[in-house]
Amino acid sequence: MKPLYFLIASSVALFTACTTKKTPIPIIELPKTIEETSGLAEFGNNFLSHNDSGGSASLYEFNDYGKLVGEHPIIGAVNRDWEDLAQDENYFYIADIGNNSGKRQDLTVYKTTKDFELEDSIKIKYQKQKSFKKNKKTKYNAETLIVVGDSLVLFSKNMKSMNTHLYVFPKEGGSYSLSSRKKFKINTLITGGDYNQETQRLVLTGYHPDSSNYLLKAEKFKLENLDSIEFNRYLLPFKHAQVEAIKIKKNKEVWISSEGERNSIPFLYRVNFNLLKMN
Image (cartoon, rainbow, N blue to C red):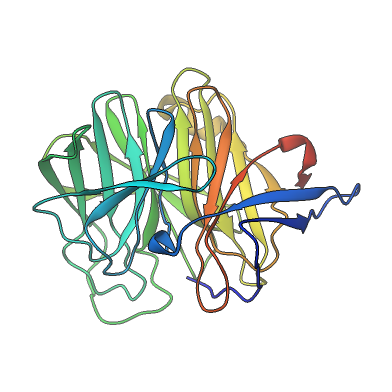
């Protein structure tokens, strides 16, 4: 994950968008309690998020004004490197799948009820990974988990090729060996994603080593037609940010969140595609 360098003093600040109209973009400051916000889910009228890299094994509830309204511990879970949060009608799926150094052999997706009770653990490994020595350019790393129908779908983060591989596995507890279903050449390091079953819209967030942040969108996404999927890539108006999570709400609004580290703050932003520049 890359560092942040900008400073924001107010709870609602303005960025200048990277668009031809230079339209100011409002952002909403999130509390420092979730400064490593790495996943987003919808919970009633509010959001849920979590920290990564050894933070508390809790989901934090906040509203769309950025006010923290609750903490929900997941008893029995461990936060080794929580990187995303997916959901369906009945469950949340917490993706403890961060593997930046390529050494982990305990990748886990925690399945919880909507009452935050741990129901099951889903263990995964990459079928072709044979070495677990430290490798900063590993292709066996991922920060993105979505629900598509009866399946969980993982998108990899490949520091070497900048491509992403798609992996599919069941929602049910067990141990699964994953093989790539599809490779997408997107020249972006994928950090978050969400899928709307009704509209069949897939959205992903990611970044490039030059510090550019992107939102990728694919329409009519189905696991049965992966060869025909095309992504539109949009430049996000945050040059020095760490966008790690995205959520399509029930009202079809798309929201993203960015981590806050060092001298920066975590923030929430509602996407307006009309203000984004395709890249």
